[in-house]
Length: 486
Image 1: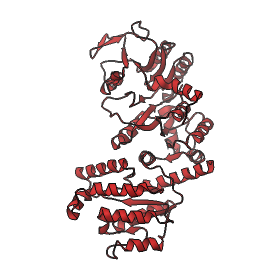
Image 2: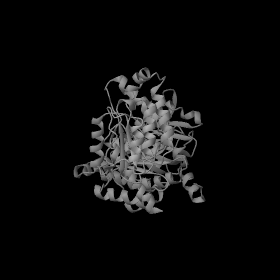
Image 3: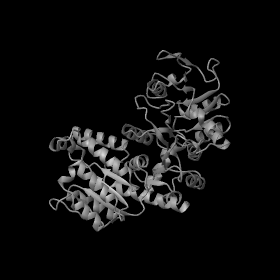
Image 4: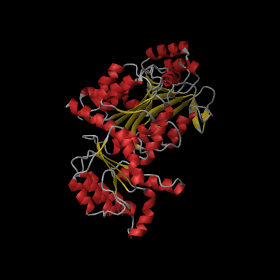
């Protein structure tokens, strides 16, 4: 997307937030769990190797971990302006620190909680008045802050540096951490992650506008409990989703859940059925729990193809799991489509009528454990005009045994290489399920390794069967939205 002057202005505005060259941490102390953890996180990611500088602020100490500690943001030895100030002091002190930021700091992150979400209205109003009176822009309060692997901006020591093209806005710091630490090790990385908290200043909509213009961002993930300006949010979503998928996990879906959101971020959540309608109308992929949220983003990152219809073909080696898939998909509104006669004829040339069933769901029997035969079956089924999507099972724990039985050097590599070549030529959604054969450490590592390598090859692996029809339904709605927009 070419950058206009307006685009560049928006990008320039947030550059100091996401690519800071100077960071001051107010509230650094010997307690490593508080504000100091931000400094330790920046040491872990070697932030200063990018040319960035960190300044620790605490009037009660003069040195911490061999680094000078300054008494105040206003100290003359700290170069101004400061790109980013992280505030981690008791709630009653926060408004004073906010006022000190005026004209000397471009952005601030207020880590401290204890405002509107704690029903402390007087302190909430004091903080909002302080924020409104200064030139500095703020994230929070009650938010963890920002991760940017490209600028080595981090919020917790020991977390991996996972570069990618997802930008993530979360009203929950914990849910920000969960997504980052689950997708990152799979090879699915991030550009920016923002724990926005109560968002008294910079809003979700402000960040959406930035991510829309940001060329590094290809997918936008959202964990939201409430939105202050729903109309503006929908307008932005309709503008963004034809270019970049938005995946939303809405927290607070029940009466008690909606009530809980108030004590978390102090927001008004609204009815879940309204949110569902809004997502359909604006092309947002919607999740109702974390695991589905993760898997939707995984598929959006790996193979974001929308189904042309809800006709599904199921390829398995075993009748029981075929029944399980059939139940899940049919109850979700899919048609377990009858395969064309020519499809069945071609399959019957490869798989004899022993231990097999060539009707959908296809139980291809033990012969299909041979990667060479299974890839041929996949190619035949994908060419069936009536099939809209394909879901299949490959059991990672079997690969080492199959290599020996079939005289193959690496059955896993052969499986992935052959499938990626065939699936890469198709315009149909294809999702793999690595059915768990054994729940032990070795089996876990085998499944995890297989999932990573499949994702690298452009084939999504979703571990929980129940999520797969929900994912394809969401992509089907997304496809209809994109078609209607055209």
